[in-house]
Amino acid sequence: MTENREYDAREARKRLKQFLTGKTGERLFVQQIPHPSTPTGLCYCDNSVFRTIGMCFKAWLLETLLQLPFDGPKLWFLRRLGARIGKNVHIAAGAWIDPLYTQLLTIEDNVFIGMHTKIFMHEYRINEFRVGKITIRTGSFIGGSAIIGCGIEVGEGATVAAGTVLGCDVPPRSTIGGNPPRIIKRNERPSS
Picture 1 (cartoon, rainbow, N blue to C red):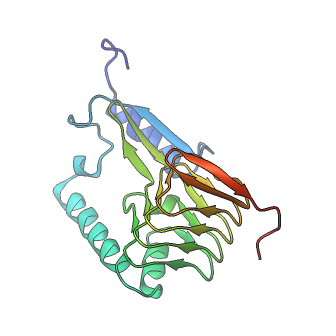
Picture 2 (cartoon, rainbow, N blue to C red):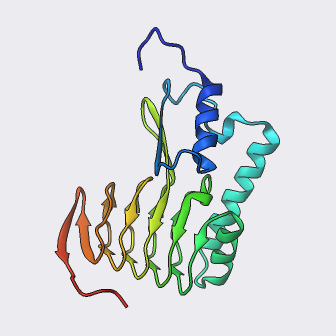
């Protein structure tokens, strides 16, 4: 962002709202911002005290439920927060899901998410703010301690190896691993 161009927080919030309501049709929202140590108008902490406390409570409750060894309460609460969750989904104890934009998360049927996996729907960088939809397609397997960045789609029947830092889409029926991630193998048979 150029030094002489003033940052317009109101315009940034307007663009973000359009993205969140699906009016843009994009998968990733990127907004140039001043340094994150200054108020950008995009952080929940820039809201009123009561809205900030409400967000913190929602985050605490989600994190608490994600520590449980059974799926029912986790999936119920994620759906209440706007996430689209299919059937036969398992989220292992200790996973972390970004509480700020849960409405951007889609997990289709027969997905397994391993322990200590982290799923981010937003991130701050030194000069930009990013929010993105996460889609994990049917029959995918996410290994433990994987990190999924915002705006990522994991293809149908794909496998993300444990510990992978995922900043790119995963093709269907592929196994991807590492940091940076790379395709380890392609499985041509359709997932069940």
